Each structure stands twice: as structure tokens, then as C-alpha cells.
Length: 369
Image (cartoon, rainbow, N blue to C red; front, side, top):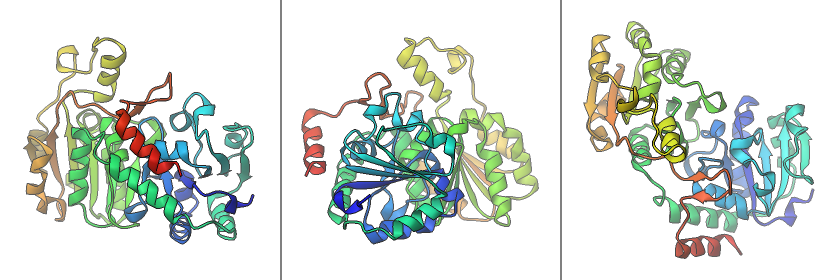
């Protein structure tokens, strides 16, 4: 393929990039060509700092999905392109673009996303080395326009959950290790957790959906770096599933900084019960059979310093807690009605809620050139 024939390419990276040890090759390639880099949920930490544009898919950033819709070439590396990424109608995925796929799994490549896609049965590291030998156009103008759309829409879809994630990110040091549990906060983090530096890590459950994984992941991550600092972002539901591991944190004196996004509901499920089942809640709210303990008292009972705070605005008062050598727990309240948006509507492929007509015209005028 002659890559010089395309003027609006994107590089889509998945978890296979990290598994193949190809992260630095992606960073070098992106800096050399100025190609915009989009990510799947399992690859959030691969393109950070000035390379960060955003995540695609069902709960992806609106601008990332709009860029995908208006690009002319998608080079997918180490991403399986599952339903959460491409939707249930394949023809809606990057409908104006040629698709190049590199995957080490023959079974994944055997499933066509586009009829005319170009496939490479290759390890992501080998494929990035192969790409480095090819000529590419200078994508500076295209990347500039992608970043302009990102800036234009940066606050458009923000909920309290996104604002809280951004408040956490502001307090993190360069290149932190962050562990994300499963739930609404997982998607808010996928949308809004921007790290400083290229070497930080975002460890996330991804497609496994293992609610409660956050604290055990954080313990393992801390031990793996000689009992170093790890930031664990979890929810009230996820934390309760492995709350006994606070004993491990205290006993081993692991400097794990636990930030609980506590909206007092099982938000990922209650949101579905609200939107699709006419508010017929079951075991997801206090009224329907789900309750939350006082996490400050629980943590203190284990000997871990802790605080309850009424909102993310108070996080800055605990900045010192986030950089010392002691474990801590900050239980941060959120509104129970905080929703997870935007979301691609399954039936139509539309990004909901819709943009107003004037703003949509501005976005299209930037991306169409």
C-alpha cells in the first residue's frame, strides 16, 4: 500500500501494542509522522501527554469517534476491533476509511471488519518496525485539526464524574501508575484521565469486566515496583467486593492511594435500569436493595488513614496524602444521578446526546477539508 495516497490517517492502538513491547515504537512513529493516535480502552496509557487524543468506541470520547468517522485510513495495531469498538453494524465503522489491521491472532483476523481491509498477521512490534520503513505524508495539518476538535468539545460532554477524574489527574505526578476498577468510573477515567509523561501506566480490567479488581491489581502493581506508590481509582460497589484486601495493604505497608468514586449506587447497572427499563431499579440503589458503608470508618478500622469528602473540589486539600509513603483512602461523594456520556446508541450508531446543529457544523468544517 502507498501510504502517501492518504491525507487523513489515524493510528489505532490496542492492548497488543503493550504486550508486544511496541509502545516506544508507536511514540517514535507518532512523533515522526504527526499521525493522530487513537486508543482502545486497553491501550489508554500508550499515547499520553502531547500524543493523547482519546479513546474510541461505545463510551469513547465524542471527538475520537468523530475523527474516526472522517479519517481516510485506519491503521489498527494490536486491537481486536470487537463490538464495543466497531459497533454491531460493521459498515458504520470508519465508513470513509481504508482499514489496515495488524494482529498476532489469526482467529481475530479471520473476522472481516471491512471487505477490502488489508491484513497483517504480525506481532505489533514487528509491524511497527515495518511501518517505520514506509513513507508517510506529514500529518501536521490533520493532527492540528483533530486537536482543534478535541479542544472545541473538551468540556461539552463532561459530567461530574469526568470533572472528578480531571481533578485527580491534576494532582498526579508525572508518569504515575494508576489502577482502575470496573464501573462508571472506569469509563470516566477512559475518557478523561490524562497523564503527564509517556511512561505512566493505566492498569484496567478492560474486556474482562471483573468488578472489584481495582484493589488487588493495585496491590500487585505496588509489590512489582518494590512497594512503590500506586493510585487506585475504584467505585463504592467495586471496593466492597474485595474490601478485605485493605488488611493486606496495611500489613504490607503498601503506599496505595485509594480514591473511591462513591455515588451510592451501582451506577453502570442503575443507568441501564433508568434508560431502558423505566426506572425499575433492582439491587442497585438504596431503595432497591443496595447500600454503602462508611468507607472512612472501615479503612480506619484497618489502620489506614482515611477521609470522607463531599465532592472532588476537596481533593486538593489532600495533595500531601497522594505523595507520601503511607496508604490512604479518600471517599469522594458524587451525585447518584451522574450519567455516563457520551454513548453510541446501539440501534442507530449515533453519538448520544446529539450535538446541537451549530456546534456540529463547526466540527464538520474542521474535519472536512
